[in-house]
Image (cartoon, rainbow, N blue to C red; front, side, top):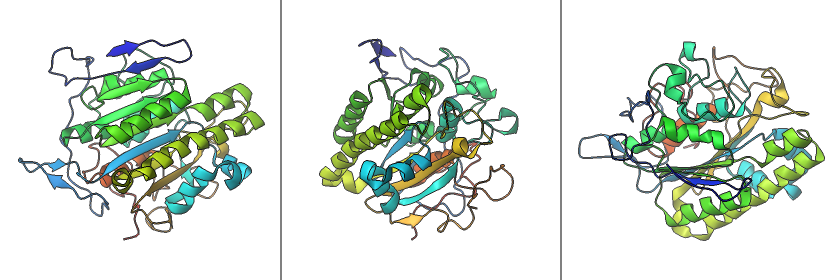
Length: 361
């Protein structure tokens, strides 16, 4: 990993990662190699035209790219409070895409790193029940998801890599370097920068000038403001509005280049909500309710629960993993693989046997 220090509060890390067998490998002991994707789940709906390589394995679609966005700490109630005047972009994406404001986090914990690990693996948290095992929420150099789970754990990054595509991560928190340690062949570059404007500019440049299958962008501003001033406080709401303006820069860039606009789908969710000074109570609606949307050139406006009768809208209740499921932020992993025309993430438990339909056709 090559690191470039800029400033204490604006540190950028760009990681250019080789395969685990190559010179200068950054793989850590216990890191599983990128797996071959498993069998397709019945009923998987994709909007990318999947293709195969010479060996008959799924390969990434030539005509589809995905921008996955996590808005850290986005309580859907903030969107109602701010309205379309102060959050026009988020309201646009919700209205024009397949969406819900009533998705759920992991049941076990409403913490940042555990939920983001769920987003990229399609797994719950509890390792004893097939989860990814990441329960901590701090930067721990040397740790990997595989060590946490006690077994090999695949991710959307490793599936994309096995299919011949590239993935990049842009994050506002250093603890996300867990991803490139856990899947060193799958995360081709990782950029960490606590300056959200610089981070979005870097992501925008990459989207417009590089041929990536997957771009994962983490925006931390609402969460930072929530912890400092209180979730749903005026300062927090201002942070959500600022994040909306940052998202607007990305949307304008995508729509400004016809080829990019036609090929890119956006998947957006959040790791948790929040109320008061924290988001640590997984039984509290304000903490475990999040938005989830898919938006793009060929995605029609729809309510995700309406076009997914196999999913159950949870109302205000906390949900278990038994029975029919709500939309969860961990659906992101297999929504991404479906959009790219690939098989679900091996070992995933969310959105694999009940894939989330994002297109009414």
